[in-house]
Image (cartoon, rainbow, N blue to C red; front, side):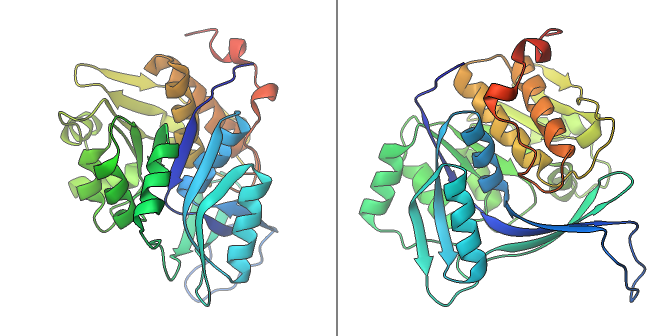
Length: 306
């Protein structure tokens, strides 16, 4: 197995997720009984870090949590997944990030109802910023903690950054130009272009500039597409016989993609591996439960057609 001695620091949302399965979506003002409910760790950046941790990468989470029950659960989940929390600040009397996710029993497609923490931005001392930058070999951000993200990105030197463009958020379009790797969701593409059916290639060109190494978009069951400034590359999704829940698939994809970058793989190989990881997660309820560990992955089989 590979041993990569690199530190990935995530700046963004770590949340407590309540994840349920429903037989169908109710009409407005109707009641419905869920078939199952679980409590798991969630959040785009945290789930990507969990993915990297299970692949053997040393990971750190930077952000703010409250001293409420949600915050206690999130902190415990980070520790259980071997994610370093030295850069986490605990604030008294505030609410931590929370999401309620429901998956349709027939196709696993999910809807997410989330609420931000009362305070997302840590107190930025010179030592705090210096220690984060000196520790990191790679940054992963989701735009939900813009002030910290901007300060770190301005002060870092040659540390690469991936941004998870999940949705349009305050200041995210200011942060994006500072990031070398930009992978978006279809929702972000719709919001960015103002078009319900955006042209994927045009969108990838639009978010690509002189500072970009790679732009990309995840398209669920339709795979993913990437642009390196010269050519486009499409990666098919891995087929899953029975999708249980798509919650967190994009977050897992981002984490797996960073792993491939750290390994020095070519984009086609990275995309295939990331698609595999997202597909494995889709077989399980919740964003983190089904993420495989490196020792349980048959890399030769995944890459046999690459």
